[in-house]
Amino acid sequence: LQPIKEADIAMIATMKPDNPDFRDRENICNWVRKHNETFSTRACGFSQYMCHELPRAKLGFHVRGDSPGSNRLFDTLLSGTIPIFTMKKQYEILPGWIEWERVSYLINMETLDEESFVRELEKILNDEAAYQEK
Image (cartoon, rainbow, N blue to C red; front, top):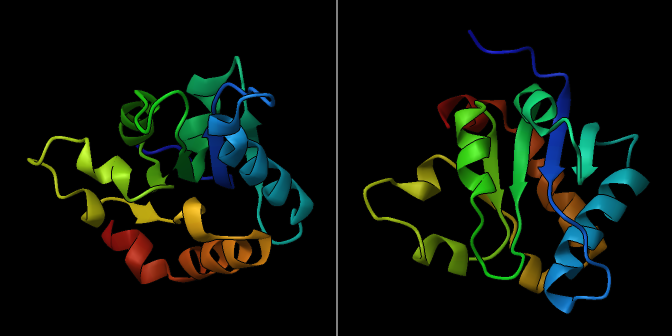
């Protein structure tokens, strides 16, 4: 039984503002909050309620931290939330027995500014057929 998707986006992640490897996490949360008339989110950043928030979101950001990967990817998948990868390199470090591109989205944060990020996220959220297929 799938929980009701009450939010568009969730990102459960530790925030380290002084670490440049974590800048994408800061940008995503800031941009999503700034555009709250366009995107709904229940959690962006650290949340002690991760187990409750992640299943309630349609999409969950999979953002690099100390390395390109994160075990939160599997938390996202197991919660019934579709992951959004933020670097092409993240696909390369995963096992090949899953067709990752078919079960996820990519918003390449390495090449985007705020306006492009918002446009890409809107495109994903407005394509209900692709969402249902994933």
